[in-house]
Image (cartoon, rainbow, N blue to C red; front, side, top):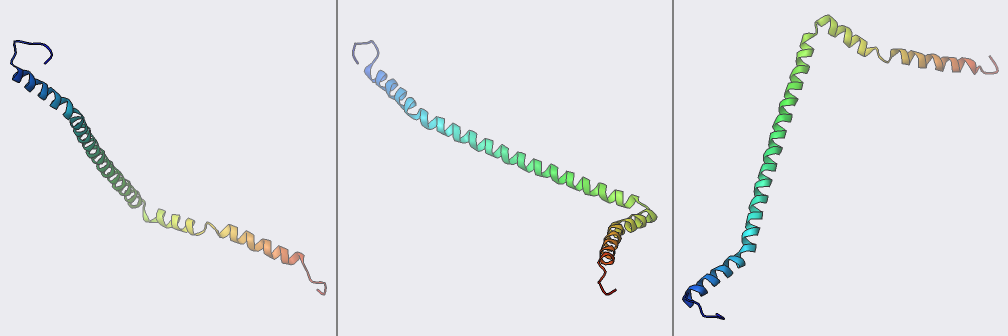
Length: 113
């Protein structure tokens, strides 16, 4: 030491060495704490992802259940009428197309007829 003290030199050397040890270990301890925090945050992230998937699955099941309940709520006559209507959706368009083609042939008569 630079100046004499009433404390034993071995004690001051031990304190100095422990201080140096603490300062030397600080970056490793900080990185260890950082890695532990990152691992915990990643675990929470995956827990939230699993929870969101479970909630989406529950909503999908509820939506499917509501659809089935609506299908079963229809009586047979209503269902048959809806099926017939769905089957006839394109009939008017088809007939209009055929009429257009027939009119086109009618307009182009051969010269000999």
